[in-house]
Image (tube, rainbow, N blue to C red; front, side, top):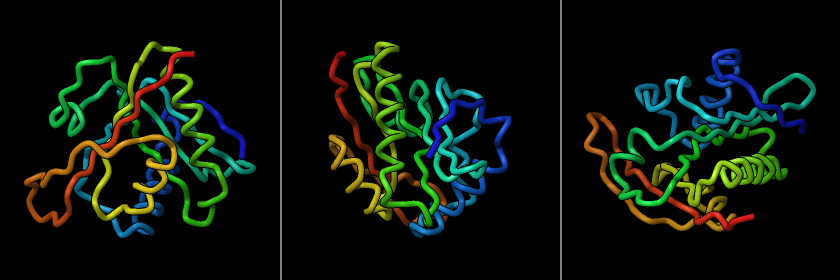
Length: 160
């Protein structure tokens, strides 16, 4: 897999298609989730095999649910859009993207990375925990017509 940095607006359709496929595979797709607007990412990566996007990962300064629900005192990056196409999972692509994200965040002087997922995405929980992330909070988001809880993780970044 080749990793390339991009502007999400230039690859929006393939990013959205990949996100939908990955979340549907995890039974976690919510067409009403508008947490991402793709204009505020500081660093966005695509994982490509040939010219097909099979993985994405990004970070931004915390906004939305992460900013609202976590008491962030340290300089924290919010991990976003960590999606691997179902046909390409369990091949190490997620770990490679996560390492690149963490290294870039470290270089930009972030001391932590935080993220939001849902209680439905248990494979994601195991992935994050195996990469040094700790679950720090679960909440009922009080959104209409949603029957899942939000789960927050974070990781302290070691200095280089």
